[in-house]
Image (cartoon, rainbow, N blue to C red; front, side, top):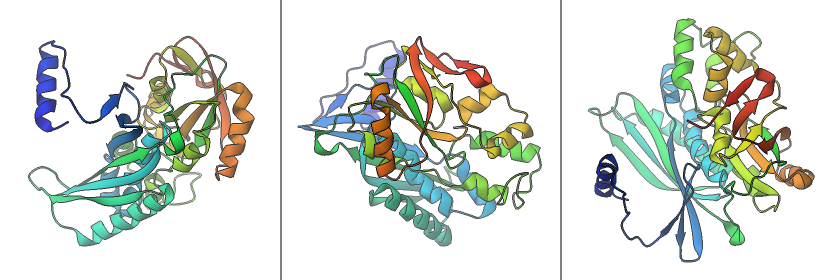
Length: 336
């Protein structure tokens, strides 16, 4: 949709009118609120998503380290494709900056290349724009395209039922979410980013910059299994992201594993409430798979064959609505 169409749509919505999109060559697939947009073109279904690295780039700027956020450009996008069962095909990136920075661009490119190899995704091109009147520093983002191989059906979550079980796959850290809060906590705590936190093994700046774990291969390994009913990227919004799969069931996360120390350390810097932590950060789990109970073992075997050996049972689906984490006394009514 071009910018003029977007403007018309917004104007009509503000007036309370029902917006009718223009006729297009593709047929949008209705998945409101999901992680990626789908479009049917002939017999093929394609998935599209777009996202930025967000304010994590400000920490990268502070530390003078750019490769990690280059890798994040890929991760934040292909993980949303994975959440509908799409295999990543291609990506175009965007770099907006206040001035040319060749060395920084090279470092971002190295990280971008690592992410693309991990996701088995092609880079088709992109845009680097020097726009000092619009940005200070650097803003990083991309748009990714995915497809459904071999007649695979998109995994929408519509088939989720009470009695299903939920598997979780660990994260590599905060990924690229919550960094406005993280940076505020670091400032208020006057944290030395070159030193390790208590219990940490590397300087805390490096620990927080750890790139987003890429879940494309994990999703690809199980998306064709008849027992897989939903896939979720636990990114911004934390555990509430599960509601995006199906809002009229309850996701009970009663087997949440021990929370990694970096999150508890951040929480103590605040202090930050448990409720805020679980709705802002992934708290140690970056991806979830909802499976039929009778297919869980087979799905776990598929994950292992795909190289994912750290998935674990984290909960179940019940009647009701929202998300619960009983161990911490948390309940979220919805995504917003």
